[in-house]
Image (cartoon, rainbow, N blue to C red):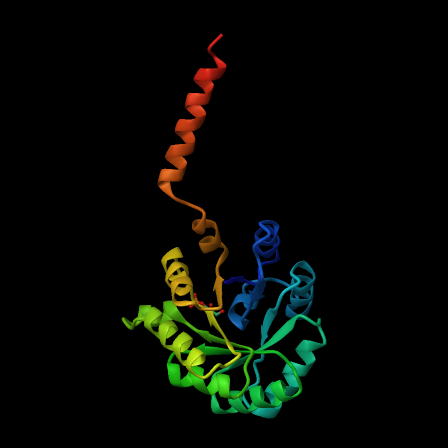
Length: 216
Ligand code: G3P
């Protein structure tokens, strides 16, 4: 399973990449708006830190505009993936971009029918948002199970990119379901390694070792 970080904060990306487990980055207009400076320069810096795919989202809403913007974003670096919203115009844009071998990430997916359309259009990644579904009392993880099953049924090459991840249980369930990628905020990546019994166990090992050292 690939681990992506969901942020436009260069410091967080650098720190996560030092772990050696980071396979890519997802950004969106909201995440970029939280950073100061030119978004294009921020994206350029991110693409230099991480070798893997870096999603950069278009803000045009018509398909010609999305394609134009997508091609311009691709000029930033080879590892830019053009993120396109799940709309009918977005589907046309994904079709055009994928026919020119431009990798795409179809974002804002909230149903398996939308995920099916993204795959048929040739998206490289499809991003179902689990946390935002949970927020409205719908089961976000059920959508992931459906997407994985549908892509498997028809041998789609599109990868299920679990987005809007809020806690390690989302990640654990996504992995059990066979989702290809999860994009997580830095906080969740930090939480993955945590378990209270690990902390208690380590504390006890070190305390016992002190007794050995003080034997003589
Ligand atoms: O990048 C898209 C997605 O991961 C957003 O997550 O927490 O804003 O719902 P969130």
